[in-house]
Length: 119
Image 1 (cartoon, rainbow, N blue to C red):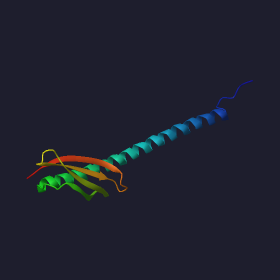
Image 2 (tube, rainbow, N blue to C red):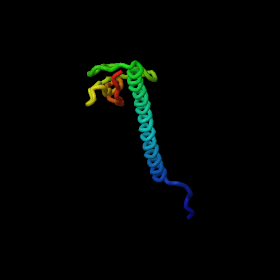
Image 3 (cartoon, rainbow, N blue to C red):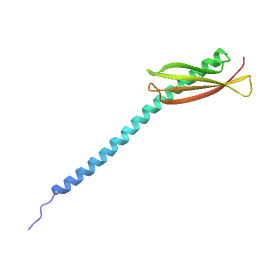
């Protein structure tokens, strides 16, 4: 008797299951990479917003009062909410300013700080 060449049905099903698992893992990895790219885009745009606010303070040569103030900024077609927190320093001729930026849902993205001198 001669045995027929080829794969059995069970072998084909096992191979399909292995391929399906590999494809599912690949899709999850691609989804994670896409989410990371979106997050990075949001953080970079938020950093631009914070940097723009701090640069504006430096260019206007203002000595801000102690306290908090809110701002909004649009970058890359998205609107970000932010807060400028001004605090005193041990030297009364300087103020520390923190620019905290969050996304549309209020999740914090970035905080930048600077020290401004009295003009």
